[in-house]
Amino acid sequence: MTGRMAGKVAFITGAARGQGRSHAVRMAQEGADIIAVDICGPVIADSPTPYSTPEDLLETADLVKGLNRRIVTAEVDVRDYAALKSAVDSGVEQLGRLDVIVANAGFGTGGVTLENVSESDWDDIIGVNLSGVWKTVKAGVPHLKSGGRGGSIILTSSVGGLKAYANTGHYIASKHGVVGLMRAFAVELGEYSIRVNSVHPTNVNTPMFMNDYTMKWFRPDLENPGIDDLKVVAQTMHVLPIGWVEAEDISNAVLFLASDEARFITGTTLAVDGGSTLK
Ligand SMILES: NC(=O)c1ccc[n+]([C@@H]2O[C@H](COP(=O)([O-])OP(=O)(O)OC[C@H]3O[C@@H](n4cnc5c(N)ncnc54)[C@H](O)[C@@H]3O)[C@@H](O)[C@H]2O)c1
Image (cartoon, rainbow, N blue to C red; front, side, top):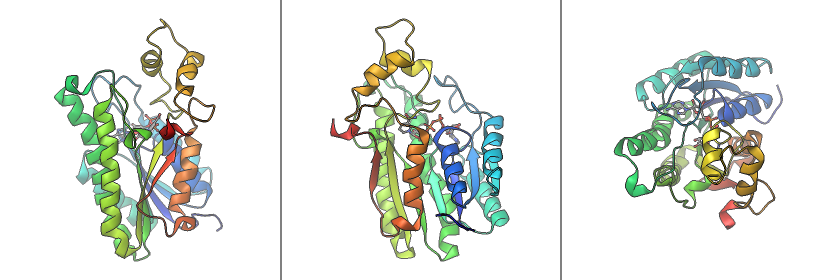
């Protein structure tokens, strides 16, 4: 078998669609087998974005199998450590090893200042985007250690983990928290040759960003904003002449960090942001 991930197994959360699915497919293209989990349902009761479904996760599985790679899937909420552990334990039992953890599952809400964020919105965001990332790594790390071959852990943060935007402060705090988590894990796991890094996407063309709620948030001046209206404002966020990137752009960064090409890279924050952090 050839490929930059030949013979390796990657555990990916939030893999039913969007970036998580793209990471699974990209790594499978390079020879990895995949353990894929997703909540496959609403993350919070009144989510502004459409939620993923069991069919979405099945589609990810079909895409990976279409590349002649193996995949084990489970419907798991990353807030549930026991369920995460059971999924990754079962996946490793079936696929034989674990090399990479991609803690990608997350969601966002916004529209109010920090002092007006409800306590339940705060708890939901921190519970998924920060505690869920910690639980994902906690569930997977024993397998990396026991494999004795080192490993790579990639935590999905955001440009909002490196700089602040108004009216989504709970999300900003959760994604900055991911950086602290990444650094602390990197310090603790280095002696096992386990590398830990974070990726920081700008807007990505996935259901989390590309939806009516975002369009209205970015264009409150318009009654029925569309994709071109979104682009006008989204482009002002970047140095490069873009409004957003594609999921595959993030997957290529994740793949690099997961691969042996990044064998001495740990503790870094890798922005895939079209220069957004320069502004
Ligand atoms: N889309 C963007 O513009 C953007 C920008 C920066 C960072 N991010 C981050 O990238 C990551 C992936 O987002 P995406 O763009 O693919 O969005 P997406 O909504 O398309 O996909 C996210 C997936 O995560 C799953 N998920 C959410 N909460 C979960 C939970 N509690 N347990 C298990 N699965 C859960 C969802 O069901 C969904 O399938 C998130 O952490 C997000 O915060 C996204």
